[in-house]
Amino acid sequence: MSKLHRRTFVATLAAGLAGAGGARAQGGTATLGILTALSGPLAAPGRFQMNGFNLARDELNEAGGIEVGGRRLRVELKVYDTRGNPAEGASSMQRLTTVDRVPVVLGELSSGVVPAVAPIAEENEVPFIMTVPTGPGLTKQRNRWVFRVNAHNDMLGKALADFVAQRDWKPIAFIAWNNDAGRGGVRGMQEALPQGFPIAYTGYFNVGEVDFSAHITNIRNSGAKAVMLFMDEEPGSLAISQIRAAGLPVQLIGTLAMGSDRFLARLDAQRLNGMVQYNAFPPNAPIPRIQAFSQRYRARFNEEAHGFAAQSYDGLMVAAAAIRAAGSLQGSRIRDALARIEHQGVTGLIKFDAEGQAHPPVYVTEWCADGKRSILYPAELAAGCGAG
Image (cartoon, rainbow, N blue to C red; front, side, top):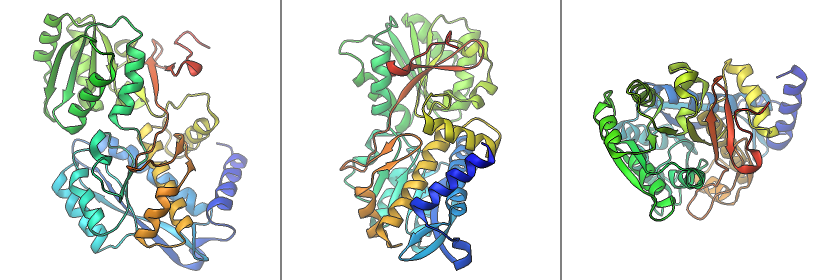
């Protein structure tokens, strides 16, 4: 991003969130809680999540912080590493809400951790804003303290199912994580596909498993024409490598984690060529807000903007907007502000429904032979790999 462009962006942000002046000079601080995975098997996507949070924090502070009751407060983050473990997540949430006494918590990375932390948010009346977990049921627990800025698996599956149903990819097979996210993704996709759409095989694997040969044999014997992989980038790259090495003639369908430059670096364009995946934030989309964020992100981290980063950036900006609207760091007032908020984020308009769920747009992208991605869905943005 040019220096002039960045100054213009920060000035605009300042007008909306802080007004003139600097938060540091006044000495006030708004410390927000963060739950993510900084170590363990989910550390790689955890880094993207933290990049989004850190970029939002820095831009807020450059713009003067958050105005609360006439004071301009500098934003700080209190970060805990859950390692994707529910017990660690619960312990961290308890510390954030009762010891650190933060007014709002953002995160988590894993759908499996959320059920352990959400009741603690409710018990201590601290809003909890999810920015990555996709388990559909996480916002259906009648917990008015839980919000989610990103699309869940049923929403993602609906967009992808609409796209797949128009292709001759029958029957379809699934390989998925044996957890809430994996099973929820498969269930959502199966329910979203047209009634009677043939399912040839469904197989699950545990976190840490690296051998997909049994699944590949079962898929070959099933006659499936397409395989959908509900997993993260590390097992996804292993599964794709083994499917290609086995010469399995199937259409590959992936998830959010399989549509980034980082995922390309784990494999190569030849093995990914033709694979499609749903995407919450295609960084090359011809949409000004996406292009602007992508430029700022690359300038800061020297890499392509990732969907988890964009969603987490939006989550922190929504929290800041709610704090400003509430005029308070009291959890109940922030919760009420979140329930009413309409915020134009980089991923789309964020407005929570009665269950605390936002409804951002969803895309389907395709890996091209040159290692780039093309938007295939929605139709009005579709270009195809042959486009300029």
